Image 1 (cartoon, rainbow, N blue to C red):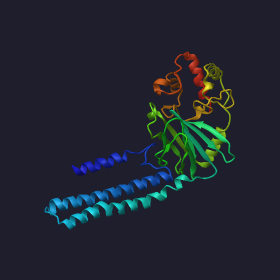
Image 2: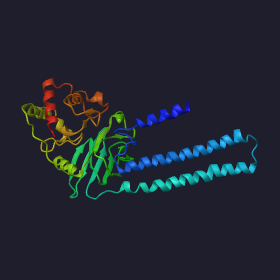
Image 3: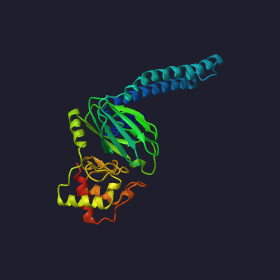
Image 4: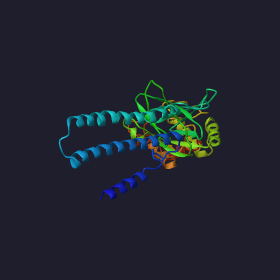
Length: 323
């Protein structure tokens, strides 16, 4: 029975893989975290085995009254000396891991602000200019990118398990983290600090790319929005303006310059919408626009369920064309 339970536990661990798992590292920092997990687990097992051995000895092997001197040695040795040595060794092993995760390549810095409940993302270029995006983070492989973290109104926490550790995001205070991705792919991030009604619906995709692909993407991301390519998309742009969407959202190259909600300049090319809660299909766009408040409780954006179906289709065509 015990052997079966052990086997089942290993099977459960083998299932803990995927886009949002510390057991599937895709970067140098996440690998360090995983190594630390196993080292600390080993230390915990060692401590447990020692205590279990002492317990078995005093209850089964020698179940008799223990001399006072032996009892005092057991308390001091097992309760003070051994934990100090074990924890000191773990600290010596783990603390040097923290310094590299606060340093970064000077060529690129990403500013991320946690809103309620979405992510504002600004890529700071070497010349000081910024490229604005939202709800998606893109990083190059083979280099360490610095992240400057902020929050608006309440405390959040930034966490991409496959790439590194988590850091709190505190209003009025900048915190820092950096990633060194090594494997291209799409990895899920999440707010890891309860921040309100839609906390569990505040995720984002982290897309790790080869450096040349990332440079090409960043150049395209800095461009203004793509002009509507069809009659329906042109009509959708008119619906966007008529409904006042530009008061909250920005679309570079158009009169829409709102800063309340996510930047939509290239929303059609993102992996998800609604801060990671829906895929980017036309049906998902229409569903999010018409039922925003039911999909994300207490979000600032109202539901636009009053828009006529044909106007909603046109608006979706316009947004999907923003690539």
